[in-house]
Each structure stands twice: as C-alpha cells, then as structure tokens.
Image (cartoon, rainbow, N blue to C red; front, side, top):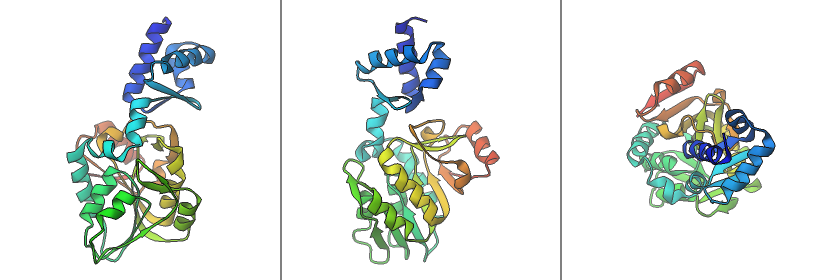
Length: 251
C-alpha cells in the first residue's frame, strides 16, 4: 500500500469515527509507527484531520462535538424522543444532575415545571428553566467553554463532589463495548464527577454515538445503569448492553 492509498484509508476511518490510535493505524496499514506519523503529518496539511496524542482526530467531527449549535441540528427527531423518554424516568422530588449537550437539553424540556431540584454545568440547559417556578436550578460554576456553554474545571468539580443526587442524566460522544468516551479533555473530569455524585447514571445518546470511539475514555459501561437511545440502534449494540447488564430504553 503506497502513501496515497494509506492516506485515503486514514480519511475513510476518520469519516466514521472521532479518533483512531497510532497502534490501530499501524496494524491496519501494515507499516511502522514512524511511517504512520509521516502519513499523519501529510494528511494534516489538508486540514481534514488533526494529529493528537496517541493518534488522530477528524477536524469535522471535533468541530461538531465542541459546538452546541451544530449538535442541536443533528438527529433532531431522535433526540426529541430520547429526551421525552428520559424525562419520564425522573420522579417528583428528586435531585437530578444534568450534563451538557443537545440531547440533555431535550431532557430538560421534558422536565419543565416539575417539582424537582436540578444541578447542571450547562448554560443552555439552565436557560430552559428561566421562567419555571416549581423547578429549582443550581449551576455548578467554573470556567466556561463558550461554544458548548459548559462549565468545567476545579470550581465545577468541587461543587459536584459536595452534593448527593438521585440521578445523573448525561450525554456522551462515543459508546463502545470498552465504555464511554468524549472528544474534549476539558469537560471529561466534570462528567466523571457527575457520575460519582449520583446514585444512578442514565446516558442519553442517539444511535450514531454507538460504535464511535472518541479520544478521551470517560468510564466503563459497568458504571452506567441505563441508556436511553432511539430505535435506529443496531442489534449488536443491544447485545453488548445486555451482556454488560445495562438497561436500554428505545424511544
């Protein structure tokens, strides 16, 4: 396989996935790490990929993952159904942690005027409850990621470590048999803190998130109690969730 063919293969891989490691590229291309690094340098000149520690990412998927506006328009109907189904899992009087992202925002719309307490690090999610009188909303505080509207960092994490919640409802970028992964190292620790402070963890993700391997590993599937997704989910992923004893609700 010459370099032109290798570059095409790398681009094809990253059209389907957020991240691919150096080890995987070496195995698939049958070349050394040094050759793969040279190929990635060449591919990066076309601005379709970005070299990162341990491998490469698609610039297009990274830009989408870090922009709330772009996330909001993808799989819109599926996210609306997922949001309603996830909101039905919440009981009145509960304390619920809501993460960031467009799918969690749909959950928030399903919780309007419910007598619950919400803790969130998402400005877009908090704004949904602007006129609500029954729903009590607390923002975590912390540094702000502008395009995502997500708060993160030590202040955010300390706040989350100080509370106890009944349920955490979180979005995620990638789900595989190896667990959950996300594209931004900045927000991963906040996601982990949300998972730790809640008695139950519910992940909301449309079917396109399954089989996707993002750059940063967040947690194993063993740390998740339930996943709410849409009916476009492939049967093999249903089997993976069943094997891992993760409850799955199709909306």
